Image 1 (cartoon, rainbow, N blue to C red):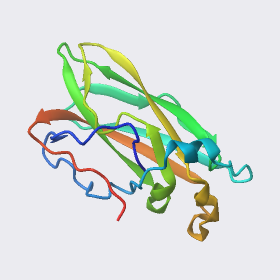
Image 2: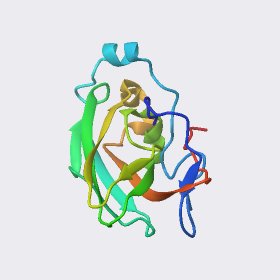
Image 3: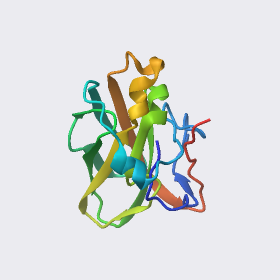
Length: 178
């Protein structure tokens, strides 16, 4: 899974004890893959006979006093077709707070086919007191998913984000496909 529009990783990491537990170079259950160019996205052929349910999860580290949730619990997609989902975040404090998120995809093996075109992961999100924002995730499942025998019984994929309070000078681990 990859965020196509994101900048190089900021020098931040989740705040608090046990930060990043279980999230290493490959993420927790999800993997980043080399990006696909825009020509491939424009010329992808949807695999109409393969419907996949994508569910959405949201978590917030205890040090961050935000409300964060998906705006939809699930959507149905087919490999090779783009989809748009939204999360909502609200700073429930009386001061500005900067958060940053990591993500994972379950099952792990499906992560290499889950491609985010636009997302908010690994980018600082500053929310003013009581501010609420919509956060889009524009993604697709690579059509090659339908050709992989390991994916034959996969009809459910979960995309999960966890927000942490951003602390200056800390490094947030980037997921990567090994």
